[in-house]
Image 1 (cartoon, rainbow, N blue to C red):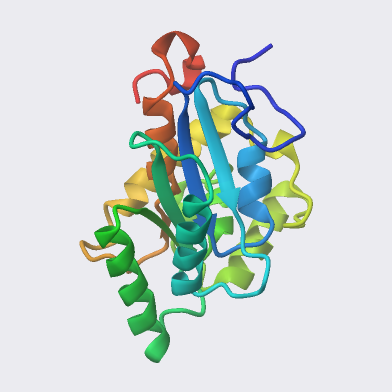
Image 2 (spheres, rainbow, N blue to C red):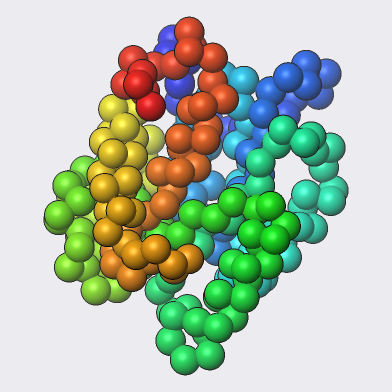
Length: 220
Protein backbone atom coordinates (compact mmCIF):
# COMPACT_ATOMS: atom_id res chain seq x y z
CA UNK A 1 0.00 0.00 0.00
CA UNK A 2 1.29 3.47 -0.84
CA UNK A 3 2.67 5.45 2.06
CA UNK A 4 0.59 8.33 0.78
CA UNK A 5 -2.48 6.12 0.73
CA UNK A 6 -6.09 7.17 0.54
CA UNK A 7 -8.17 6.95 3.70
CA UNK A 8 -11.72 7.61 4.78
CA UNK A 9 -11.22 9.48 8.03
CA UNK A 10 -9.38 12.68 9.01
CA UNK A 11 -5.71 12.66 9.99
CA UNK A 12 -5.68 12.86 13.79
CA UNK A 13 -3.05 12.39 16.44
CA UNK A 14 -3.69 8.92 17.81
CA UNK A 15 -3.97 8.38 21.53
CA UNK A 16 -0.81 6.76 22.83
CA UNK A 17 1.13 7.47 19.64
CA UNK A 18 4.73 8.55 19.94
CA UNK A 19 4.99 12.33 19.92
CA UNK A 20 7.65 12.45 17.22
CA UNK A 21 5.15 13.22 14.48
CA UNK A 22 4.63 16.77 13.27
CA UNK A 23 1.30 18.54 13.54
CA UNK A 24 0.13 20.97 10.88
CA UNK A 25 -2.87 22.87 12.24
CA UNK A 26 -4.59 24.51 9.29
CA UNK A 27 -7.55 26.91 9.54
CA UNK A 28 -9.40 27.83 6.36
CA UNK A 29 -12.20 30.09 5.23
CA UNK A 30 -13.93 27.22 3.43
CA UNK A 31 -16.33 24.77 5.05
CA UNK A 32 -15.92 21.69 2.86
CA UNK A 33 -13.25 21.40 0.16
CA UNK A 34 -9.89 21.84 1.98
CA UNK A 35 -10.76 19.40 4.75
CA UNK A 36 -11.87 16.71 2.31
CA UNK A 37 -8.83 17.28 0.13
CA UNK A 38 -6.23 16.88 2.86
CA UNK A 39 -8.14 13.99 4.42
CA UNK A 40 -7.44 12.06 1.20
CA UNK A 41 -3.78 11.66 2.16
CA UNK A 42 -2.25 9.61 4.96
CA UNK A 43 1.20 11.08 5.40
CA UNK A 44 3.95 9.30 7.36
CA UNK A 45 5.06 11.10 10.52
CA UNK A 46 2.78 14.06 9.78
CA UNK A 47 -0.71 14.96 11.02
CA UNK A 48 -2.63 17.56 9.06
CA UNK A 49 -5.63 18.82 11.03
CA UNK A 50 -7.99 21.12 9.16
CA UNK A 51 -10.12 23.63 11.08
CA UNK A 52 -12.91 24.56 8.64
CA UNK A 53 -15.35 27.42 8.80
CA UNK A 54 -18.59 26.00 10.16
CA UNK A 55 -20.44 29.09 11.35
CA UNK A 56 -20.38 31.17 8.19
CA UNK A 57 -17.77 33.56 9.63
CA UNK A 58 -15.16 33.34 6.91
CA UNK A 59 -13.30 36.66 7.09
CA UNK A 60 -9.54 36.38 7.54
CA UNK A 61 -9.80 37.67 11.11
CA UNK A 62 -12.45 35.10 12.02
CA UNK A 63 -10.31 32.33 10.53
CA UNK A 64 -7.29 33.51 12.52
CA UNK A 65 -9.33 33.69 15.73
CA UNK A 66 -10.60 30.17 15.12
CA UNK A 67 -7.05 28.92 14.61
CA UNK A 68 -5.83 30.54 17.83
CA UNK A 69 -8.75 29.14 19.83
CA UNK A 70 -8.21 25.65 18.43
CA UNK A 71 -4.49 25.76 19.12
CA UNK A 72 -5.14 26.61 22.76
CA UNK A 73 -7.25 23.47 23.14
CA UNK A 74 -4.69 20.96 21.87
CA UNK A 75 -1.37 19.59 23.02
CA UNK A 76 0.86 21.50 20.60
CA UNK A 77 4.62 21.22 20.28
CA UNK A 78 7.20 23.87 19.35
CA UNK A 79 7.93 21.91 16.17
CA UNK A 80 4.30 22.01 15.06
CA UNK A 81 3.16 24.52 12.46
CA UNK A 82 0.05 26.71 12.24
CA UNK A 83 -1.33 27.80 8.88
CA UNK A 84 -4.10 29.96 7.45
CA UNK A 85 -5.60 29.06 4.07
CA UNK A 86 -7.31 32.17 2.74
CA UNK A 87 -9.16 33.07 -0.45
CA UNK A 88 -9.15 36.60 -1.83
CA UNK A 89 -12.54 36.44 -3.53
CA UNK A 90 -14.92 39.03 -1.98
CA UNK A 91 -12.27 40.25 0.49
CA UNK A 92 -10.17 42.69 -1.53
CA UNK A 93 -12.70 45.42 -2.21
CA UNK A 94 -13.41 48.51 -0.15
CA UNK A 95 -12.82 48.20 3.58
CA UNK A 96 -12.53 44.41 3.30
CA UNK A 97 -8.98 44.70 1.99
CA UNK A 98 -7.82 46.58 5.07
CA UNK A 99 -9.29 43.93 7.36
CA UNK A 100 -7.73 41.17 5.25
CA UNK A 101 -4.31 42.81 5.47
CA UNK A 102 -4.68 43.44 9.19
CA UNK A 103 -5.40 39.77 9.84
CA UNK A 104 -2.38 38.75 7.77
CA UNK A 105 -0.16 41.11 9.75
CA UNK A 106 -1.41 39.74 13.05
CA UNK A 107 -0.95 36.16 11.87
CA UNK A 108 2.65 36.80 10.90
CA UNK A 109 3.32 38.40 14.27
CA UNK A 110 2.00 35.25 15.92
CA UNK A 111 4.21 33.01 13.81
CA UNK A 112 1.34 31.69 11.71
CA UNK A 113 2.12 30.69 8.13
CA UNK A 114 -0.20 31.93 5.39
CA UNK A 115 -1.22 30.42 2.07
CA UNK A 116 -3.46 32.65 -0.04
CA UNK A 117 -5.35 31.51 -3.13
CA UNK A 118 -6.53 34.10 -5.64
CA UNK A 119 -9.39 33.91 -6.23
CA UNK A 120 -10.19 30.69 -4.31
CA UNK A 121 -9.15 27.22 -3.17
CA UNK A 122 -10.60 25.75 -6.36
CA UNK A 123 -7.77 27.36 -8.31
CA UNK A 124 -5.39 25.09 -6.36
CA UNK A 125 -7.53 22.09 -7.25
CA UNK A 126 -7.61 23.17 -10.88
CA UNK A 127 -3.81 23.32 -11.00
CA UNK A 128 -3.81 19.55 -10.51
CA UNK A 129 -5.22 19.29 -14.04
CA UNK A 130 -4.23 22.30 -16.15
CA UNK A 131 -1.12 24.39 -16.66
CA UNK A 132 -0.48 27.65 -14.85
CA UNK A 133 -1.11 29.56 -18.07
CA UNK A 134 -4.65 28.15 -18.24
CA UNK A 135 -5.77 29.82 -14.99
CA UNK A 136 -4.41 33.35 -15.29
CA UNK A 137 -7.50 34.83 -16.96
CA UNK A 138 -10.12 33.36 -14.62
CA UNK A 139 -11.88 36.38 -13.15
CA UNK A 140 -13.52 35.09 -9.96
CA UNK A 141 -14.41 32.07 -7.84
CA UNK A 142 -17.51 31.23 -9.86
CA UNK A 143 -15.57 31.10 -13.12
CA UNK A 144 -12.83 29.05 -11.48
CA UNK A 145 -15.31 26.49 -10.16
CA UNK A 146 -16.92 26.32 -13.59
CA UNK A 147 -13.56 25.56 -15.23
CA UNK A 148 -12.80 22.91 -12.59
CA UNK A 149 -16.19 21.32 -13.21
CA UNK A 150 -15.38 21.26 -16.92
CA UNK A 151 -12.06 19.51 -16.31
CA UNK A 152 -13.42 16.93 -13.87
CA UNK A 153 -16.77 16.31 -15.52
CA UNK A 154 -18.47 17.36 -12.27
CA UNK A 155 -17.53 19.28 -9.16
CA UNK A 156 -19.30 19.47 -5.82
CA UNK A 157 -17.25 21.01 -3.02
CA UNK A 158 -19.22 18.93 -0.52
CA UNK A 159 -18.23 15.69 -2.25
CA UNK A 160 -14.69 15.78 -3.61
CA UNK A 161 -13.44 12.59 -5.25
CA UNK A 162 -10.07 11.22 -4.15
CA UNK A 163 -9.38 9.85 -7.63
CA UNK A 164 -9.28 13.39 -9.01
CA UNK A 165 -6.20 14.24 -6.93
CA UNK A 166 -3.53 11.51 -7.15
CA UNK A 167 -0.04 12.18 -5.79
CA UNK A 168 1.33 12.69 -9.31
CA UNK A 169 -1.19 15.50 -9.83
CA UNK A 170 -0.25 17.05 -6.47
CA UNK A 171 3.33 17.29 -7.68
CA UNK A 172 2.15 19.00 -10.88
CA UNK A 173 0.06 21.46 -8.86
CA UNK A 174 3.02 22.33 -6.64
CA UNK A 175 5.27 23.06 -9.61
CA UNK A 176 2.62 25.10 -11.42
CA UNK A 177 1.59 27.08 -8.33
CA UNK A 178 5.20 27.93 -7.54
CA UNK A 179 5.62 29.38 -11.02
CA UNK A 180 2.50 31.50 -10.57
CA UNK A 181 3.65 32.70 -7.17
CA UNK A 182 6.78 34.23 -8.66
CA UNK A 183 4.49 36.44 -10.78
CA UNK A 184 2.11 37.36 -7.97
CA UNK A 185 3.98 40.42 -6.68
CA UNK A 186 6.14 40.94 -3.62
CA UNK A 187 3.36 42.05 -1.25
CA UNK A 188 1.40 39.92 1.19
CA UNK A 189 -1.61 39.76 -1.13
CA UNK A 190 -1.12 38.25 -4.62
CA UNK A 191 -1.92 40.56 -7.51
CA UNK A 192 -2.54 37.79 -10.06
CA UNK A 193 -4.27 34.43 -9.96
CA UNK A 194 -2.17 32.05 -7.90
CA UNK A 195 -2.24 29.67 -4.96
CA UNK A 196 0.32 29.47 -2.18
CA UNK A 197 -0.94 26.11 -0.94
CA UNK A 198 2.15 24.65 -2.56
CA UNK A 199 4.06 26.20 0.35
CA UNK A 200 2.06 24.14 2.82
CA UNK A 201 2.64 20.99 0.79
CA UNK A 202 6.38 21.65 0.60
CA UNK A 203 6.49 22.15 4.39
CA UNK A 204 4.65 18.86 4.84
CA UNK A 205 6.98 17.01 2.47
CA UNK A 206 10.03 18.41 4.25
CA UNK A 207 8.91 16.61 7.42
CA UNK A 208 8.52 13.18 5.85
CA UNK A 209 11.56 10.85 6.03
CA UNK A 210 13.13 10.57 2.57
CA UNK A 211 12.73 6.79 2.68
CA UNK A 212 8.97 7.22 2.99
CA UNK A 213 8.44 9.83 0.30
CA UNK A 214 6.64 8.80 -2.88
CA UNK A 215 8.87 8.95 -5.95
CA UNK A 216 6.82 11.89 -7.26
CA UNK A 217 8.04 14.09 -4.40
CA UNK A 218 11.74 13.28 -4.62
CA UNK A 219 13.81 16.40 -5.24
CA UNK A 220 11.48 18.90 -3.55
